[in-house]
Amino acid sequence: MNTKTLLFPILALALLFGCQKQNPAPIIKEPAAPLVNAGPSLTTTLPVDSVRLNGHATDSASKITGYIWSEVSGPNVPVFSNDGAASTLVSGLTAGTYIFQLMAVDSLGLTGVDTTTVTVKPRLSVTDTLRTFFPGSSFPFELTFLNNAASPAGNNRDIELLAETWTINAVTVYGRSFFKFNLSPVPAGTVIKSARLTLFSDTIPQHGDLIHANSGTNNDFFIQRVAGSWDLTNTDWNNQPATDTAGQVHIPQTSQPFLNLVNVDVTQMVNNMIASGNNGFVMKLNTEVIYNSRIFCSSGYSDPNRRPYLIVTY
Image (cartoon, rainbow, N blue to C red):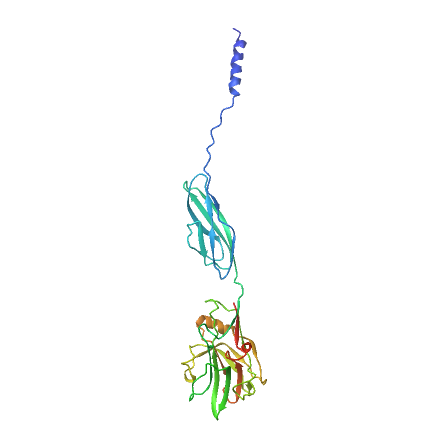
């Protein structure tokens, strides 16, 4: 047999088998990790310092077996009510921007994550006009003295607040007034931005010379914070509460017969009241000598537009 004739079929078979493609190895598909949604971005405004985070997760291959919330970044470390639940309340937030992460784990041990943003806006300014009437009381929390040690009783229904030294039947009497505003609308722990006191001169004075609200050459006076407790029935001239000079306001001498005091800055004293207890204000002459007076309308005054008020902003 011809050698060439024998080689040709062998080469043809080799080429035939060498050109055939081999089947690829089967591809093993990895299980999908949980698909996590941490919920929409949220916004709150102080004093509301908490929000509810509502997340969820899905898994096409297995069951979701757990969640964990954590803080990625933020101005402080808030508190989760349950960091192991898809929905949780986070509280103790302060002004600023937070990023929170929700992680979900499935029964195969696979995890997925997503984040959400919480924006906390600073407290909006609130302005309240406060009066000396308290809930459940028919009378203002005001106590006026025009007395001395021998005649100590005060008058809690006087239509005037005053700082005065005068004589009645040739007997020297001293006028001081205590008055307390209802601070209950102000949240506990609030720092007052501004507190402004307004007092109106009584144009028909019932004390002093009975003609002018302001008399004398030494009628400058102080408005001070009252540091001790007092009430309308048991406090008299001889057991007046202590006063605090911190933040006191000096009202200068005036020769004007009538002069309203508008927007007197008592911010420091009001903040001290919130921090240390609200015992109100007292007004008294700087030098208690006759004949000097500063007379203003009280909350018992017939014209409600001339009653004292305190405007606080916080």
